[in-house]
Every structure is written in C-alpha cells, then in structure tokens.
Figure 1 (tube, helix red, strand yellow):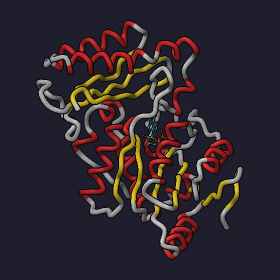
Figure 2 (cartoon, rainbow, N blue to C red; figure 1 turned 120 degrees about the horizontal axis):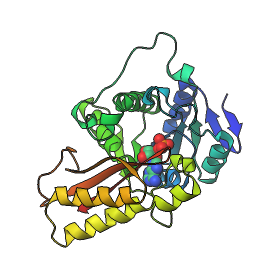
Figure 3 (tube, helix red, strand yellow; figure 1 turned 30 degrees about the vertical axis):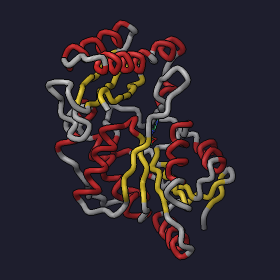
Figure 4 (cartoon, protein in one colour; figure 1 turned 90 degrees about the horizontal axis):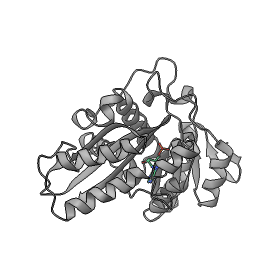
Length: 287
Ligand code: AMP
C-alpha cells in the first residue's frame, strides 16, 4: 500500500515502485526518474520540471545513500526534512516518491557494486575515493527498479553526470540519462542542500565561486589560452574570499581530462570549502 505523506504518494519498497511502473505503462505513460537525497530546493524542482517534458509519470527518489559517504563525511548530519520534501513534490506534481530505508536498499548480505573507472578518478574522486562507486551503484539499482524512459541529473554534479552517462552506455541500460543546467540563487551561488551548513558570513562570501568562474569565462572568450593562468586566478580569488580550494581544474567536458590549451570546448570545475560546506560549481569556458 502506498503511503500518503503531505499530499504525495510514497513507495517504500522496490515491489511498490514496480507495481506503480506497471500500471503507468499499461496506461501508456512514459516514465521519468529524478534521483535525489532529499532536502529538496528549487534546483531539484527544475529537474522535476525537465523530467515532465519527457514523461507523463514522474518518479522522484529520496534516499540519503550511506554508500556514497566516506567514514568522516556528513552522512549523519545530512538534512532530512522528509515531510517538507513530500509537500514540495506534491506541489511540483510529482507522481510518486520512492523513499526506501538503507536496510531495504542494502539488505543483509548485500555485496554487489557498479564502478565507472577513469571518469571517477580525478576531481571529486581524488578526495572522495569511494564516493562515485556508491553513486553509480545506487543509481543503477534505481534505474533497474524504475525502468524509466529518462532519468534527469543536474550539471551541478558534473562529474557524476558524466560517470552516469558512461555507466548507462557501457552497461547497455535503456534509460536515457539527461543533464539539466545548474539552478542558482539570485546572487549566483549554485543551489545545494549543503548550503544550509553555511554561516551568514560564509553565505555572503560563497558567491565568489560563481563570480570568479564568470570572470574566467569572460577572460577565455576574450582570447586567453593558458589554462594554468586561468586556474591560478580562480584559486586566488576563492582563497582571498576565505574559501579553502579542494580542486580547480579546466577539463575536456567529456573525458574530464585537463586540457593543455584553451582552444576547444572546455569546462572549469571547482570544489571549495566554506566552513564545513564543500561547494561544487562548474561552467563552460568555451562552449
Ligand atoms: P542531491 O540531492 O544533492 O544528491 O541532488 C540530486 C540531483 O539534483 C542531482 O542530479 C544533482 O546534480 C541535482 N542538483 C542538485 N543541486 C542542483 C542545482 N543547483 N542545479 C541543478 N541540479 C541540481
């Protein structure tokens, strides 16, 4: 039996989702999946809206996935405002929420994983060596349960999006993996569930990330060709504003390998700590 939480239909088990999927299919509906960890913000809702462009039935999963957190990371502290998430989904016209427990996702005896190799090694994978294996494993399970036509992910987690596209391609998964643009606050800061960790001062300083990315983009479009120089300026600007830069790289948008010269499409990708929030952002320098 599906639960009703704050006006939204909620499934707790794969069987419940599969039954809902069967019924939607029988009614001729296309299905879209939007995987999330909850603590939903307007950025997540843009993914729901994008999903709606491709499907008549939209399934949002809400699962704080223990497998993608390192032992010293914020799994316990991660915000879980479940009722509020349900009411946001109801408002956005989401047709079903899948909210399993960790024990349902990974029952006793669980021992299977999905790993995408090269794409997950640098950038976030360097500081978080087990993170992407957790992401690709849980997303593959969600794709298998939902059997959706499309699954929508945000470009905010750009490396994740590329790894998931690769995974679906390599493993012949029929669900089409789609990316959606980064949703930003009015001052440009990329929306994130982790922004709630920021103090008022850190919140005021954090938009330096997007400002410096925009400056880098302008510089490259004006003819700068040296990625080292652009990276150095990005790092200097974020550090001067109180950020602790984890990494800043300018990479090929598909292979995610650093580029030697800025003469073709490239993406700048950054991860910077402000206080206890590790903030991600990225931007095309040359489209
Ligand atoms: P999360 O709940 O943080 O795991 O994110 C769930 C999905 O929402 C992922 O595909 C994220 O890339 C996406 N997402 C999170 N924040 C944003 C944002 N500001 N703009 C676009 N997509 C986002």
